[in-house]
Length: 336
Image (tube, rainbow, N blue to C red):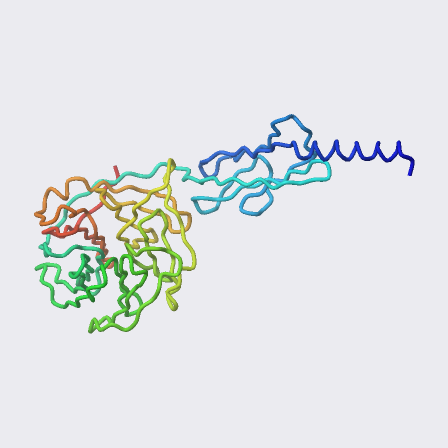
C-alpha cells in the first residue's frame, strides 16, 4: 500500500474515533409528569457534535419523542433513548414518576354510632364478618387475633401469637383468616372457626407486613411504603404491585387496608385520614379527613394513632378505630 494512502486512512480513522469518544450525550426528561399529559423527550450533545438519529422508548416500548402516556399505572417508569452517530450508538436511560391527572376528592365524616373498644388492643387490622368485628393487634408479646361483639366491645374469641411475632393487618378470604407479621417476612393462616393455625407464607418481594385486605380475586397487602401488593390467593406470592400517587407526589406509609366498592381504602401511619386508591392505576382518587376523632377517645399509649377500617357491605356501614382507642366509630362519609 502506498505510504501516503496508509497515513491518510490512519488519520481519518483516528479523527472519527476521537470524535466518537468526545461525544457527551444526555437524555432530557421530566422527573415527574401527570398521566395523560404530553411527555417531551430530547437528547442533547454538549459539544455540538452531529447526531444521526434517535429512537425513544417508554418501559422498553418504542414511542415518539412527544407522546401522551395514558392508561397505565402510576409511579416509577423507565424512559430511554438509543442515539445513533457515525457508526456508533449509545443507550441513555432516565427514571420518571407518573402522577395522577386529577386532584383527589375531599371527604369529611359524620358519626353515626359509637361502640366500646378494648384500650389494650393495639389495633393493626379490622374486618367485619357475619355480624362481628375481627381484629388483629400488635406489640411484642401482646399480639393477638380476636373476634369482637360490636355493640359491647367484648372479646369472645382470642388467639395469642407467639412472642416472636409482632402482629399486623388481617383479612378473611375463602373461609380462612390471613394475618401479617411486621418484620419476620411471614404471614399466618388460621382456621376461621377455631383460630387454630393452619399454615404460613413468606413475603416473596416486600420487606415488611403492614395492612391486609382482599378483592374477589386477590389478597391485597401494604408494606409501609407507597406500594400495594396483589397476592395470588392460592400461593400467597406477591405477583404485582401498584404505587399510590396523587397529582403531586407519592403517598407513603400506607397501613391498614379495606376494599370497598372496588376501591382500596388505606390508613396512613400517623395521619388522621384515609386515602381512597384506584386498584388498577394507583391514583389517589379521594382523601377522607378524620381529624377530630382521636380527641373523642381515651388512650393508654402515645402511639395510639388512627388505624383500622372495616366495612359491612350488606348494610353500608363503615367502622374505624385506632391503636388503644376506647371506641370504635361507625361513620358516614360526606363529599366536601
